[in-house]
Length: 289
Image (cartoon, rainbow, N blue to C red; front, side, top):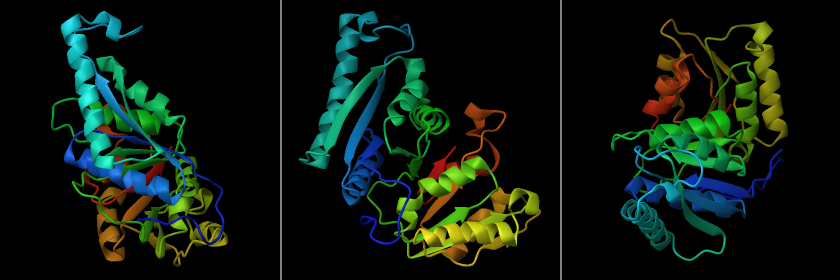
């Protein structure tokens, strides 16, 4: 999908990758795509399966020790079966470690954050709670809000997709957007075309004017990114309704933006633009907070 960085220079050198995987079709596809990314950067990939125990059992301490024998065997077997399925799908690799963590039901967000902190890039699937659990949402929130690392969200593709040729950067004059821009450099330098877009710009004081955008574009070009002339888009509907048409018109195959925390974080996945783009995404999103 994406080759190693060969032109320009980047501020990052990715070597440690983490993917949250499961035994679903899209979980297997996500693992394979994460393997491609790690291989392109000559890095090591950890594939982690989070296996929450039933809610009736207490949090804290040794969660397995709190279970009766039958429940303990069932929980362990579920994780082991998923790990075996993923190993069979991945094939042999000396740079891939697949394993499961048994965690308390309410500890999934914290566990995702703990895992993400030791990776250069954390990869997870689009939140989708078809099984009635909160696990996907907790992984998203833990990795992005508390992990402190760049994150890549992949859509619920059941087969690996090629992507990485056309990037749309959604720019706001904020620390989150700045961190996302830098985090995405290893992908951006490989893209064939990059568009820098400021939706409903707030003006000079935020760096969301022609001069401010020109500075960001110059920064990208110095790193070898093939960025087009920046654009500013105005819409009375709000950025979250304008951006899908921008994605389509540019034929973007991945997005870059900062993840902003709203007032109802858990329920709204940060609210506003972040929520809409995450819930309706049809292409990968590189984000940071």
